[in-house]
Amino acid sequence: MPDPTTIPHEPSRVSIPALAVGFATIAVGIAVSLVAGWLLLASTGTPANAPNNAARPGIDGPVQETNSPDRLAAYRREEASRLNGYGRDPSTGAIHIPIEQAMRILAQGRAR
Image 1 (cartoon, one colour):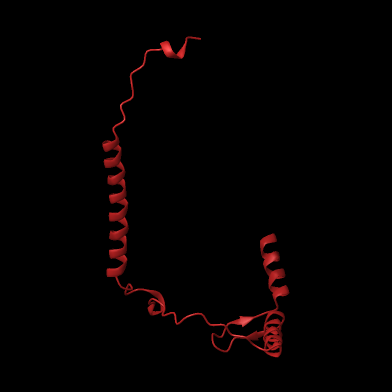
Image 2 (cartoon, one colour):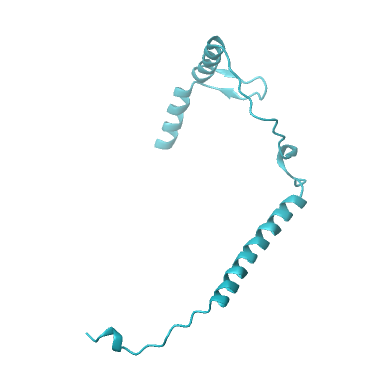
């Protein structure tokens, strides 16, 4: 193996000003793209065809609601009766069946 000190090579000429200009160009490009994106989002409103008349939500602040254990138990009973019983949702009119039966029906449909 030849001695590395005797291998001819071209000396490296790193230009610090050229590197600074390159980094500055990249930084300015990123800044311009971020500002352009922000301006685009800030200037456009909600689209006319947005679902449910969507708008930016107004957030009042954090809300912490604590309920009594009785209210939680009542909620769980109501949800369990909906999951394990038959009925119709009064607001939408959707019919629901017990979840076990629904899973059985789906499993039979996929087996066919």
